[in-house]
Image: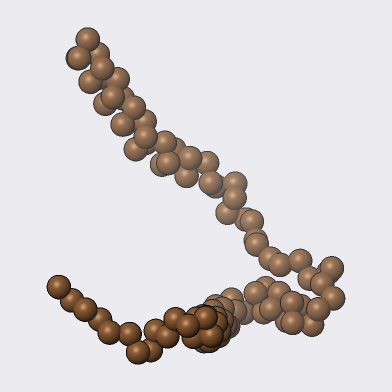
Length: 99
C-alpha cells in the first residue's frame, strides 16, 4: 500500500511540475494579442492622459506610476502621523527599550 501511495504521490508531483510547461505550449495563439487602454469612453483629461501614455510610451507610464506611488505613500504617512499625534500617540518621542 505504501508503494502504491508513493507512486501516486510521485505521479502527482510530476503532473504538478509538468502542467505549467504544457499550458505555456499552447500560448502560440496569444502572441498576436496587444493590450491597450480603451480611451473612447473617458471624459476626464487626467485619465485620458494616462491611458494614452500607457498606449504610446509604457516607460514614461512606469515612471509616473513609481513617482505617484511614492508621493501617495508620503502623503498618507504624513496624514497618519498627524492623525495619530492628534489622538495622543506621539511616535516622534518614543523610547525604544531593548532587552
